[in-house]
Length: 478
Figure 1 (cartoon, rainbow, N blue to C red):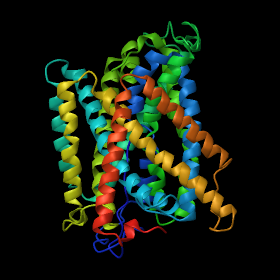
Figure 2 (figure 1 turned 180 degrees about the vertical axis):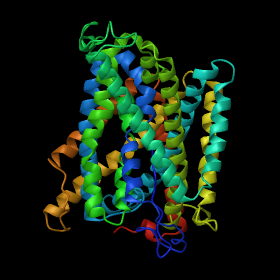
Figure 3 (figure 1 turned 90 degrees about the horizontal axis):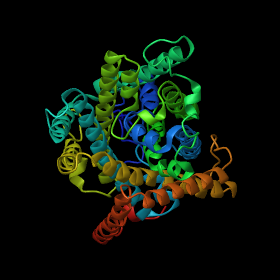
Figure 4 (figure 1 turned 120 degrees about the vertical axis):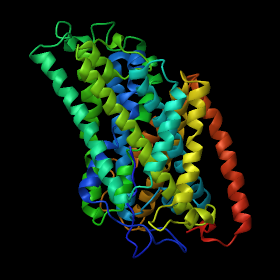
């Protein structure tokens, strides 16, 4: 998973930002960087690490789970595209929630999306720490790696946005190249026949071992939260495209690439891996890509892939840490957060917000210390529920917008979501089913316990801010 927010030129504030301090960001990310970052955003820890546990639970049927979830993601992205083409908004999705649902929902969405990226940063640091144990095994504690990476990535955020964009471009290029390379190697093994896995490599591995649903449909449904976590942050395609100079062309192109990205990087990759290596070889806590190369007898390949997925995790955490500082500043500019988050350094970096977010990410170090074996499961479940909130808001807002547009109250978007509002309702029902499945999973259930507590915090803090500034723009209905 990866994210980035394009910094605006200092001639004016990001659209939607209000108040003093809106200036200071510089638009220095080009179309080449934005497009590759958008593609790389669909490839992250959920696939590289989380798929190991999902394969062990669902077997080959995981392919179907990713395909169906991918269709839902496409519906979400087209709903977002319709909103963005109606009124492009740079930043988060809280502005749409504020317009179509009310000021509290905009407030809750903005802060929940910020929390999502903080938790995601913890997730990625946890994954990176796990990847390091591939080389060191028990020689160095997992929590220490998490601490080192958090500190290093915080320091990396002092880099200029132009260099940041270039680094993220190459990080994404590495991820894409690794996936495509793995698919080609597996295809070569299946057709030509080489490596240690050639004797047992066959497409029949997808159904030979107890069928396509080896543990039943129920277990496949239980993996949906892992599947949906893998797709989190794909909505940031809309954020980067919405801040480009030509959103009318860039946005539809970026969103319409979602189906083939899912088909190649998820469905295609899993088909190839489980065709070459029987699904029963994979287990939780191990990257299926690293294990696949080991089983093929390509030891150096496994080490290379482990480095690639380590880079991918650090890249995603770096992007998340970068974005959280900007999100806090956007909230503060709209009167929905402390004013000191609006402060910028001389080079235009929101140091206060970034520092605050990085400090909270140190919670990941503590989690890795007290429960290294369960750390990834805990943070994945909480990141999933907080990330899906943004999707829910996108879908609900699109439904409300389409109804008003059809009545002629608002202009019609030139990029209408196909099948809407029915496709949006289907996506909402699917997300609801995922939440139910999370409630049945003892490891994922902890996130559902935390959600009401977070809702209470949001409700109380909103009332406090509203009482202090009852006439503020942040609390006025549009």
